[in-house]
Length: 147
Ligand SMILES: C[S@@+](CC[C@H](N)C(=O)[O-])C[C@H]1O[C@@H](n2cnc3c(N)ncnc32)[C@H](O)[C@@H]1O
Image 1 (cartoon, rainbow, N blue to C red):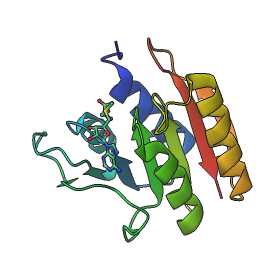
Image 2 (image 1 turned 60 degrees about the vertical axis):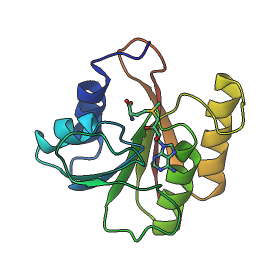
Image 3 (image 1 turned 180 degrees about the horizontal axis):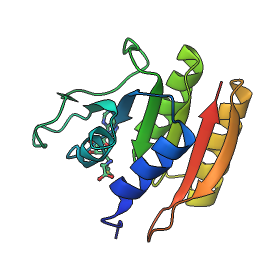
Image 4 (image 1 turned 90 degrees about the horizontal axis):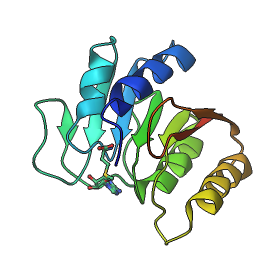
């Protein structure tokens, strides 16, 4: 069961670690709760998710792909499922930092190898990475990356 505090905790981490980044893409944003948490911390945020039911926040009701034009200076994803890999590739493509809190992989890879794979993917694409643990229940390992 995912922690209900996860959006506040992740938003605090993002503001602390990326203080100068003001325009955030929240990929696989679900209901848009991370968007609310980021906006309350002075960030512009656009959430992407194919779901139609969400909070009244800036929201692109579509699949996030590598073809999305980049108007962000930080791209993030909380438990973004198959979009997690796309976030890492997108960040490398546009030379912007990323932060992901991975849960399930897009190909049934177990959690630990999935975390290792994402880190190797990012470093292979020329990003440097750091892992941080959010103080929450459930999948809490967080991978940060910078160009
Ligand atoms: C486990 S939910 C997490 C939602 C939210 N981030 C949270 O923590 O509650 C995963 C979400 O990823 C979305 N998703 C998966 N791949 C996506 C993609 N390529 N673009 C946009 N949304 C995607 C799904 O629609 C789903 O809402």
